[in-house]
Amino acid sequence: MIRKFYDVVVIGAGPAGSVAARYAAMGGASVLMLERDREPGIPVRCAEGVSVNGIEPYIDIDESWVAARINHAKLVGPSGNSAFLRNNGAGLVLERRIFDVRLCELAIAQGVRLLTKANATGLIRKNGVVSGVEFTHDGVETSVACNIVIGADGVESRVGRWAGMDTALALKDLDTCVQYTLDGIDVNPEYCEFQFGNEISPGGYVWIFPKSNHSANVGIGIAGVKAKDKGPKEYLDTFVAKRFPEASATYTVYGGVPTSYMKDEYVQDNVILAGDAARQVNPITGGGIVQGMIGGQLAGETAAEAVKAGKFNRRFLMSYKRKWDKRLGDNQKVMFRLKERFLGMTDGKFENLVNFIKTIPEDKFSMSYLFKEAVKEDPKLMMDVAKSFILSKLKK
Image (tube, rainbow, N blue to C red):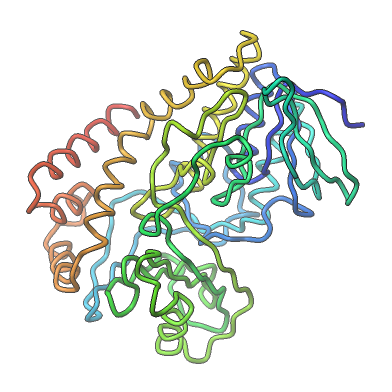
């Protein structure tokens, strides 16, 4: 039975939403989570790659949702010249349909009520203050009252717009993406692959994330400003025809990935955004699963604190933004500046990076080496990168 009132309503049952719901409930809040699809985790709009260190704080690793274990990555330049990135931590390629359900089960175990096929249609206001959510459940219009709404509804976040937030993204801060799950191919399941070059993927890259030795997620993301004359599907089709001419696509997905950074507007009276909705995505890689779970935790904890204090205004809820800035926000801003630089990189510069990686001993390699090489002609940015990596180590 659905109650008439919950302290917190979470819209979206992806990683950010389910973790937000769990932590809000752990903090003593009553929580309702709404998922518009028939089950969490669909449609899969994700390359499905994560770091082991990133997800371990939130869920015990279960082989049922692990498609492949990644030990290193292969970086391929425009000419086909390649180098391996090693000593950078273990990774996983997930089965998101199973993984997302497991995260929801952890939230439910804390007392969260989950409704699927529940499509949020608007926010309720009382005396100008957000006081609930309107939604359809199995096609029936209904509503629920609450004190806080957490919008974890993805890059297109309707919750943000309904709350009057400025969620617009510049084209340069939105990657347009296409991905195929290919079968009948030959791939090494121990490493993922990234291909760069302005003829291959301008302002972005092609990725190959293995799911077995004969299947992989193969996708492309290109900066919106680079997609004017030729779209990502055309680039990806060209790549696949050359690299995997006999492949069959068992799944196709289109989507957008924010490559901006979280702004103050993503918190308002009675409303918090988390995950892709709050632009909690690495601007360089476009990875958002781990960042979304971290943002979800901070959003859920902040919501529970607000319920205990009986304070739901923006001033109180802005502690969420301050926590994010301390945890990842400063680093994300540096990554954003790096992305701006990479957006204009020539093929020659990409080739230089690949050659530089080859000179680094395996046991000495780190991402800081790579980024410092990429920005060595910009002393100020180089100092920011160094500071960012030092701070990230200190916060662990």
